[in-house]
Structure formats: C-alpha cells, structure tokens
Image (cartoon, rainbow, N blue to C red):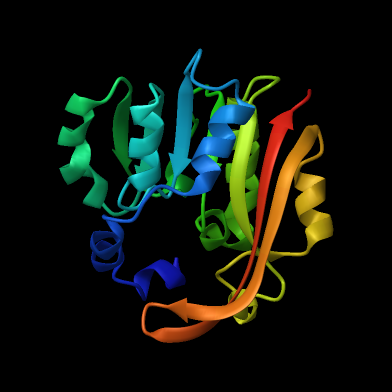
Length: 199
C-alpha cells in the first residue's frame, strides 16, 4: 500500500516500543469475560507489540500480525507471561483465513488496508469470532486528513455501523482533533468501537 511504503515502520515501531498498552486492551478483556478464562486474541497491526504483550500478561494467546518485524525481537518477554504471543510477519491482506478467536483487536491499522482490501479482510475477521466474541477496533472517519488519499479507507459513521450489523456496540469513542504523525501535522478522526458479536 502506498501509505505503508512512505513510512519507515521499523523506525516508528522502535520509537513506540516503550509506550504503555492502550486502555482499549483492558476494555476488550473485560468485555470478553475478564481474566477468568483467557482465550485467543488476533492483534492486527501489532507494531512494537505493547498491546499484544499486555494481552499475554493477562494469560491470553495472541496471534500478532504486522508487516514490520519489530515485535519479533521482543518475544523473549514471553518468559515472564502466563500467555503467549505468536508473531506473523505478513501483510494482513494476504492472510487467507484467521484463527478462531475470542477477541479481534486492531488500532490505527484497518483503514490502511485501503477501500478495496478492507471489506474482504473484515469478513474474515468477523468469521473468526464466535457468537459472544469481542471486536475492539479503530477506523478512520471522513474528517481525517487522510480522507484525500485513495489508498486509505475513511468511513462515515453510518458505514461503520453497517459493518457492525450483528454486533452489540458496548462502547464507542471518537478522536476528532489536530495532532501529528511523525514530523507532520495531521488531523485525526478516529472512531474506536468495542462490540460483542450477537449472531
């Protein structure tokens, strides 16, 4: 994808390696039943792995996908965890089928698939979840400054809601503000949805 080609993901992920896990991890675990019965998580666009490693610390088995292999060098940290991380060094658009999972998790990644690849990947992710499974994902909204790019999927809220047909939305937050991406100014419009599959 054009966006990925213009970014040094290895440098970006190395810089982010020390950041804490997002609060969305804890929300996803709670929505999936908490730490009592940890299962399988799919982490799409795992980057430096802060979120994958946090799931593993809570006993979850994580399939972490990323086209950059920064996370691979951090997996020695698994020795101190009750769960585990299996890293898949691949473009998620090329994955023919995802393992069955109780949580599908992805932040700032699915939109980078672009409008052509996103629908097929989304269907595979929905299929990987059983009834009661949890989806915790970000999408770029139409106010995002990347909306002008043909290689990035930016979606109106109505279309996102349609994608979550067959889910109960548990929580939703919207980031619609000026910020930065690497050294450049950027307007972020990111819609985060936590939902449980109902059928």
